[in-house]
Length: 72
Image 1 (cartoon, rainbow, N blue to C red):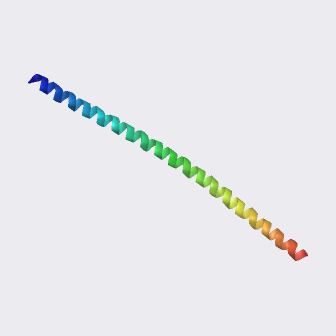
Image 2 (image 1 turned 90 degrees about the vertical axis):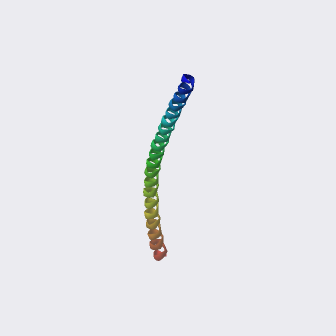
Image 3 (image 1 turned 90 degrees about the horizontal axis):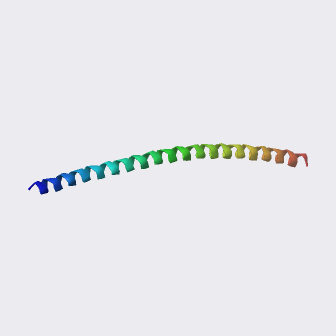
């Protein structure tokens, strides 16, 4: 009878340890995901700035071209 209780108790301990490992893994994944999301947001912001700068430069070049065309 005692051996059954020991086995049941060991099973409970194993289940608790397994749950703790799963929770820790989920927290690690969540943390990693948040970091990756933050990093991607920063990259997206930098790309947005690059695109805006390029659009401004394109507009400047179009204005210069119009002036040159008008001069001809």
